[in-house]
Length: 218
Image 1 (cartoon, helix red, strand yellow):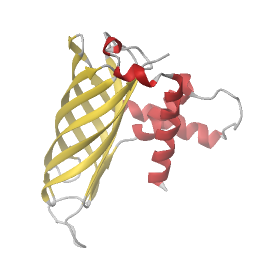
Image 2 (cartoon, rainbow, N blue to C red):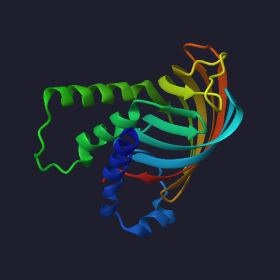
Image 3 (spheres, rainbow, N blue to C red):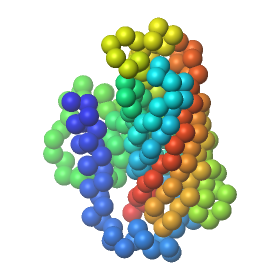
Image 4 (cartoon, rainbow, N blue to C red):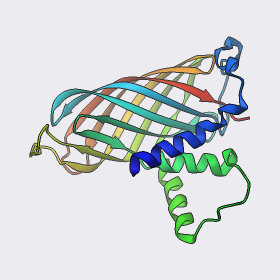
């Protein structure tokens, strides 16, 4: 159910592609000069995870990054490998925020209950637990240090028994840095991060390269 919900949100957001010409994504003149509030990036990555219950392992990830100013962005990712997954509340909150502040259908139908409204509001607020500061180095290169305070992580040893040195499921802290190189609206973003669980206090290190597309605000 959770995976289907994530797919729904990504399809809903990316349906706005119809508003752009496909050729814009290849236009070198479209390379960004600065970001604006409402810009967002959706990307995917191969990853290498160090110091998991299974040692060093490969994984794959999806990430959404939404700018709330020309320098500050909120982000969320989901990374999954064998017996491993981590994700943040922004996977729900960021798409809800984008739909609410400019990317929704605006047809006024489908009124939400109070419980739904409070759930979505809470998810949006929690999205701010993962923030980045985007520093331009050149016209088409940014460097982005980031911090995540409430990342959920589930990691087990291959098989049925969990490695007792690691907490199987916990909330964790992460801090890292990525370098974003823009080719038109395509983005290549190598990154490296440090993370540590609040329960087992064991450190891990992740590296990877995100490949994504920038959707500028209209």
